[in-house]
Length: 119
Image (cartoon, rainbow, N blue to C red; front, side, top):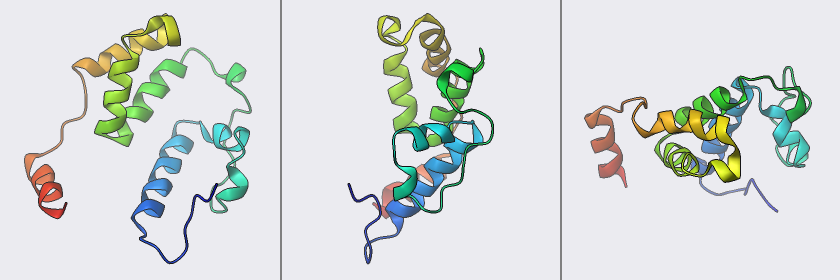
């Protein structure tokens, strides 16, 4: 799997960098290492605190929600869909993700308009 293509558009590389920064911010850097992507992403550092999911405390659902919210609308929509499936993700995660049904960061209309004109 080739994550970083040379000579192409830097948009994907910038977005990947943003995603990895958010993962690190909320202490999910170990996931990148665990699934074997660290050697394919040379600029990604080691996670700060945790080495496994078992080490995470009750803040896991909150940190997952905040991660999705910070990553943007597509990830928020994913969280909203996941919130309807406690049978798949557990009651605590589904309950926390249900907060994304109505409580999300706002985006200014001018910012949305600029993105629409760009694309």
